[in-house]
Each structure stands twice: as C-alpha cells, then as structure tokens.
Image 1 (cartoon, rainbow, N blue to C red):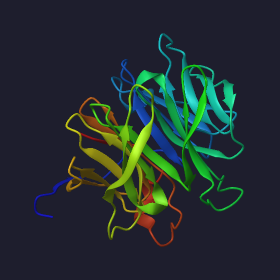
Image 2: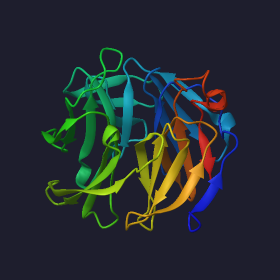
Image 3: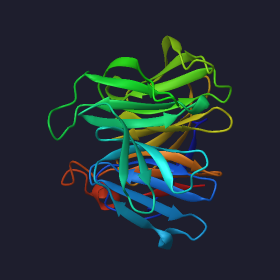
Image 4: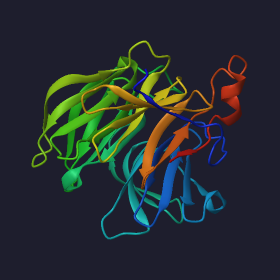
Length: 282
C-alpha cells in the first residue's frame, strides 16, 4: 500500500440524514444535484455559494438517477419508481415518458448519442433483492432495450473517454465488469472482469471516471472510495467517517460523495454520526 495515495476526510461538507443518498451530478452552472432514493427527495446546492444554498424537494416517487435534457434548464430526465420520467427541478413534478417496471430502479447514466441506461432491482421494502433485475437502455426515439439480464443490485455505470469501453457494477458480485462498447449503435460485447474488490469489507457501489481514465469507486460498508487505475490497480484511497459510502461525482477537480444511513448504529456509532451526509474532497 506504500504506492497508494491516501486522503482522510473527518467531517461532511453538508450534514444530512439521507436514507440512501445517490447520483451526485454537477451541471455547467455549478449546481450540484443528488437524490435520496428512500425518502424520495431531490437535493440541490449552488457550489459557488457553498452549503447554505442547499435546497430539497419532495418527490411523488423514488428517483435514483438523473440526466440532462438538451436545451432545457428546468427539466431533466430521471430513472424513477415506475420507469423513465421527466422531472421539473423547480416543482419536483414527475411526468412519466416510459413506464417500464413495477420494482425499484437503480442507478443509471446517459451515454453518448443521448441513450439513457438505467438498472432495475427488487424493491427492498417488498423483498430481498434477487437476480431478477435488468439493465435497460432507452434510445432518443424511446425504443427500450434489455442490455444485461440477471442483475441483483445494479449500481455504477460509466464509459471510457474514447467511448470504446463501458463499465458496470452489480454490487453483490464485488466486480467492476467491462464491455466493448459500440458508440454508433449502443451495443455491448465481450464481458470481462476489470476489477474485483478483494478482501474488502463492503461492496462496490457508484463510481466516477476522471480525465486520466481512473475509476473512483465507492465501497459501501467499507468507509472508503478506491481510485483504480486503467490497469485495474488501486492507486488511491479516500477514507471517510461513515461506512455507507454510496457514490462519487466530480465538480471540477473536487469529488462530491453521497452516503446512506448506518444499518448497525449500535455496532458502528462513529459511522452513524455522519451517515447520510454529503462529503467533498479536493
């Protein structure tokens, strides 16, 4: 571990009590948005005005992932409880454009050519997650494609800078898998394991990819973010004061990190104190 760079975080950037914070994304106006899936909240912060600008909206359904709509400042497209929807960022109103599932959606992301990838899983409020989930791809013409079957807990998804490789996480496997990606058609092929979380407490959750191709992956239950090189080697580690780290997202050179509530507060009181908060690392 001598060649691994370490960052230590001792307190949150914004103290919150999210049950399941996810999907941090900073737009061109320097507005950070993220969601609380379980409490059905939509959060925003103007990063030029710091945490005091924090706002939140109540949502009628759970939302786990968001993406911009070209030419619109008010509306974004989201992966929601019943499918794909348009969310008004001022009112919190949802309008479904493609009802697909009756279970809980999982994290997703927009790829090149305007395709929107969203995973589904069993709603933990109803039953324990099984491998009934699917990673869907919605094209701009609203054609829906089932891209990966037998998914249990879909989480991180992203693409290499050259758009030739897609990365994906199904958390219980503890793998980041890679696929050859065809940007022209949206097709994927040649599945292989890029990185396996070996011997770590916790599982891989959301991730972000930096300008050098390194993957910053949240280890939920492990109180850390790992920085993984393009060769699949751990070269950095962010240590956080709560175990349930869920997803990082870049805002310039800074990394904003969401988290979830601590399921075992009596056993891990240090983790419970800042669980569900938002963290920031430069």
